[in-house]
Amino acid sequence: MCGIVAYVGNKQVVPLLLEGLKRLEYRGYDSAGVAVITSSGMKVQRAVGRVSVLESQIEKAPGFEGCTGIAHTRWATHGSPSVPNAHPHSHKTSDGYLVSLVHNGIIENYVSLRKWLEAKGHKFTSETDTEVIAVLIAEFYKGDLEAAVKAALREVTGAYAIAVICEREPHTLICARKGSPLIIGIADKSYVVASDASAIVSHTTQVITLDDYQVAKLCAGPNDKYNPVAEASGDTSGGGGPWKVDFKTTTIDDVPVTRDVQELEFDLAQIELGQFEHFMHKEIMEQPESIRTCLRGRIDLRDNRVVLGGLASFTRELVRARHFILTAQGTAFHAGLIGEYLLEDIAKVPARCHYASEFRYRNPIIEEGSITVAISQSGETADTLAALREAKDRGSLALGVVNVVGSSIARETDAGVYLHVGPEIGVASTKAFLGQVLVLTLISLYVGRRRYLSAEQLHNYLEELERLPDMVSKVLEQSDAIRTATEKCLDRNNWLFLGRGYHYPVAVEGALKLKELSYIHAEGMPAAEMKHGPIALIDKGMPVVFVATQGSQYDKVISNIEEVRARGGRVIAVATEGDTQITRYSESVFYVPHVSEALQPMLTVVPLQLVAYHAAVLRGHDVDKPRNLAKSVTVE
Ligand code: G6P
Image (cartoon, rainbow, N blue to C red; front, side):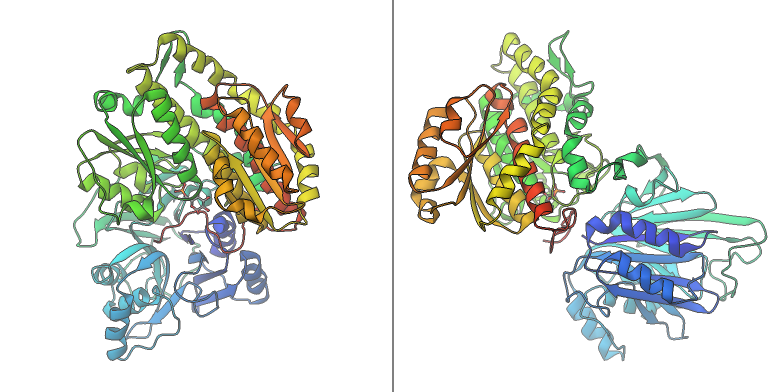
């Protein structure tokens, strides 16, 4: 939800900012903008639409040469996507210097701040909450950008990651965060700041992160001119003389803090499309490999155990747990629903998954022995973070099942297990879902073995898990057949997805994937629930997708299929290899290898991901950036 990238150093900044914005575009894509300090002052360009629109505007507008700049790609919250609402937001200080700012987050008290600033004579040009920060900084600016930013941030409530520059201090970049993500890369003679690592790794792998309420002052400039609080030097070329770089970190109350430089573990190929046309397709196809990396070092067949280093110091609490509270949003919530089944079935501990947005406001009951598990790909989802804090405040042990290392949720939990499935760029989550279900499976086995699961039962699961990547590959081989079957149903704008037991959440996830990518209306639900209303929707030709693998409820699902067929519905089934009977009832069948019921969701979801992917491509939609969506929802 909004991506920011900023740079101060010795290189021309515009190409670098545009490259960074393209990498971050999945975070928001309704408008974009850059601000650059040039030899003739601040130059700002903003455009509605994709980064490519901004790029072509800048190509036609000369004079964007400079080595200090900020950029933003937006997902609108306050104010429609328009040029005035696009970032950067700029405002003049009392002595006539322009301050420019990019922001990711939400300023909750912007209405009162805006009134206060308007009463002081400031004019606003946008409908955004962000503009108040730019105006506040300009209001407080007395020749020291860092001091002005801190003064402004002491006034605001809400969430922010910001990057700020000022014409008067051409070699200085100030950034700060509270609640929203921000990473500072330390590159050769320069600093590059971004919402996530994907916009940094092509420059450096040395990074520092900030905690909430912390501010970094980053300076890079020619030695003779380098003076962060000097009069405007006019020299923004970045050339000549020895080069000086310097950074300092403090809190917004000016208390010095030390931040360690960390090494980013990131492979550039992970964020490149390679042979694929879309990130979503790449991420679906690389699931066998992401399962392998997620499992690496975690299953030990020789000693017959699950190794979860992140949970080791809480094993006692886990074994004695009386209740698991799983909390998440979106696709991660569906992984949590599967987690309910896994924890109850394998670990024999009661478990409930809650929408984080509901959980946090419902006055939740946290009793002794409750363990809360926040599930999130990004680790930044505002509601999930808030639910986690609520649970912690009420005394719950808090665990994280998170993909992005060092993200807010990962940092605020007591312990956790990373997914290690690599960066997920496609807005619709696929490989992270599989990773979340896999980690929840591992946690269930870890706890289960210490409760009621026999050594033999564990051994069987571990053997199956080891074969899981190959099984997923077999499912992926059916991609062309899935495309053909999907194409036949694309004339219909209402679909149903049905499943029982472990496959009820899979059905809901399949429906979500289809609706978010193809804009076809789809509902997912327990197969038995169909009779209580949705059956009224079924008419001749309506596509109904059944997850109908062989397992404890197979016969019941077949009965539901009969009910749909009797009303003319068109049945698409996901079934177990070797099930010939099901072809009698279904127009199309996709097969998954046979595996224990508890592990089946990691196979049965794959054809549904492919249905959604192909539907979106066939309908000509932007698969990686579906309309109105954002990858990481950092507002409530
Ligand atoms: C957004 C994304 C979804 C994702 C959800 C939760 O809605 O578009 O793909 O499942 O947020 O995100 P998280 O990062 O917490 O898993």
